[in-house]
Amino acid sequence: QLQESGPGLVKPSETLSLTCTVSGGSTSSNTYYWGWIRQPPGKGLEWIGSVYYSGSTYYNPSLKSRVTISVDTSKNHFSLRLSSVTAADTAVYYCARQSRAGTMIRAFFDPWGQGTLVTVSS
Amino acid sequence: EIVLTQSPGTLSLSPGESATLSCRASQSVRSNYLAWYQQKPGQAPRLLIFGASSRATGIPDRFSGSGSGTDFILTISRLEPEDFAVYYCQQYGSSPETFGQGTNVEIK
Image (cartoon, rainbow over all chains, first blue to last red; front, side, top):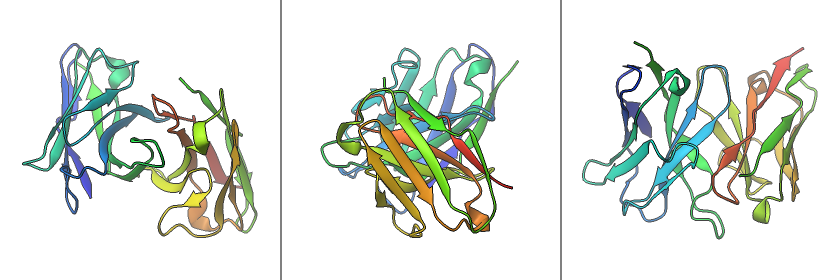
């Protein structure tokens, strides 16, 4: 199980911060990556980035300059920070476990957290 | 990045009918590394299919995936009331991972 937490309202130009707490599994596992995906209201899904237990990260180039994803294996959670937010960053933010498949170290997402709506507004 | 285009945007069908959803990639998806998800209103996406044709754990066999290269299909045979939802494809053969824009399967 994965559960997102964090503020539901962030002011423009500030930093969005979310945490995903993992239960029934371990962020110390060397089998999985741990990812963040977002969905603007009424729109489709966008991968933000993923982190490995070692702290190794991969980010979507479209967001890379503003994103930081980290993992705290002692607390069994991982976190997202998105800086300089605008109204375009308003979305439901999901965390998810990302499996390996074949030769791909990052593949499909399963399971997902329930998601948390973050609104960017003054 | 690979752009995934799903069609149709909306599919209006009755329970018991079959649904055929398309996902076309802007370039070949390496090793058919393509997944399908189902999303119901207010819920997170749920993994249905990975590797283009392998069903995820607990997914009924009325869901099937096929295709290769740039063209992939999700087929839902004998639609059940709980199958009416939005379906997304996702490729993971090259970074960044990308999703299609979704197909809404609605009750006719």
